[in-house]
Amino acid sequence: MASPHAVSPIPIEDFVFPPSVRPPATDKPFFLGGAGIRGLVIEGKFISFTAIGIYFDEGAVASLSGKWKGKSATELAESVEFFREIVTGPFEKFIQITMLKPLTGPMYSEKVAENCTAIWKALGIYTEAEEKAIEKFMEIFKDQNFPPGSSIMFKQCPPRSLRIAFGKHDAVPEADVAVIENGPLSQSVLESIIGKNGVSPAARESVAARLHELLNTSKASNGEAETKANGVEIKA
Image (tube, rainbow, N blue to C red; front, top):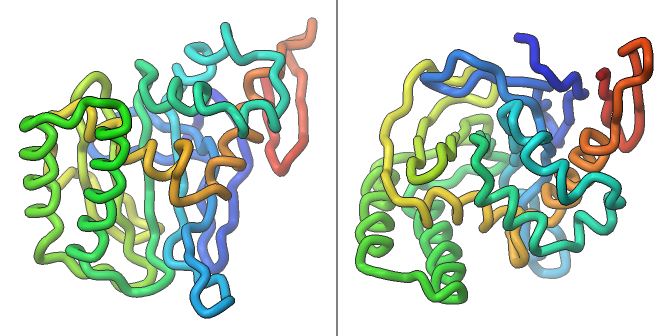
């Protein structure tokens, strides 16, 4: 499954996120933009709950390059605006969330709803439409259970669609289980992971490092330039 951006896989505990995937109901590969752990400190010990891989369609680099090319990985990681542009950008995104610990659908959806609502209230965009979208979101998850190794998958299709699928880490399904048409929800699922107060700082830093390399890799005169850094291999 060739991707226009040749990047390396990312291992997260017992799982590996491949360099590219083909999301459900999609005929083109998305490249791995970054990955990281989501966890909590419980009684002084960090407990990992999920591994998160974030993929972008091939238009992501071109969309972001005009403003962000030349910035360091640290500058990108610390920029709220950069991640807002990722979240709101016109390119598609695919998020794979793999369970490291068992989790019920209601436990997962309630936390996502809480995080998304907080984002909307901060932006002043929480309306009846968003409330109904959250209700539909929680309905989709109410009878689900996710053992270790299972995955929740989201495809963000601008400007409004959030496509949802369930599967196993190494087996992306052919079809979605549901589609919700609400722009703020579609964007906020990703923002709740890598945004300003996102649940996975590790994924945020990984995305910043990898996009930094992709944004700043230019073709050599023979068209065979190759850069390796931050665990990322890019061939242009």
